[in-house]
Picture 1 (tube, rainbow, N blue to C red):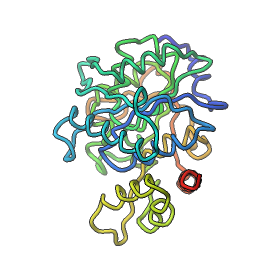
Picture 2 (spheres, rainbow, N blue to C red; picture 1 turned 90 degrees about the horizontal axis):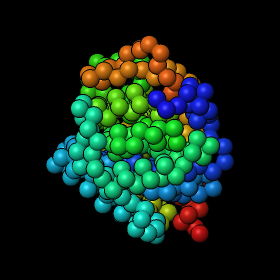
Picture 3 (cartoon, rainbow, N blue to C red; picture 1 turned 120 degrees about the vertical axis):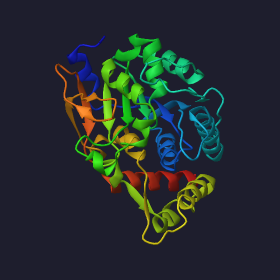
Length: 309
């Protein structure tokens, strides 16, 4: 570990002032990444978004991790187009293979760009990496350039809360199970981590069709796009709501009071995606709750103001 515990604790404090960040996202996997991306981009007073990276995923919406990454990259471009923002030099393709248990770094323009930004940062002005997908891009960067671990803070929406019974979700969360080896590498590397759990914490950040139709859909091309993605996720909207998990990671950076957290020893991640205590483990920040109303109100207000500009 390049960092002393004192240095790590300093980096894990609430960031003052404007934050330099990148967003690492499996944007096409679901509907929540798009909302998180828009909220970050519409918050220039607090967040200076330097780049968006597409990361891999594999489920019924893709033919494999590389295909998932490409679909996510195309979705990033669609979001940027509707926000009338250029993509050149801003949106980057990520890795097409997982780091895996062999902890093998993968090559991608996103990985090299992240390394460059981190190397240009410092412990006094760290780069915040908001990672809301499989952590393969970030793990590859740490493997290729381990010295960047003391120049950035990783805000990762990864697995479920440690208290969440495995019987409720035997495969843990989607982001974690995509690349468990990369998750292990991240948690073992010593890089400052703000861990944002899925089930048990950000699963409380939900919305529904009437709310989306009232506060999102009327507001420009991006509002209509997000509302369409939300409503198309289910064929039956009766009594239905949907988690918008990834907004919590951006929400913590915007206002840590919206995602209360504590400092705790970093757990050891087993190959079976279970959490274990370890000896002399370094500290991480753990988000244990989300203020769903505050995060969504902020998003609705910014979206309305953007459409009315």
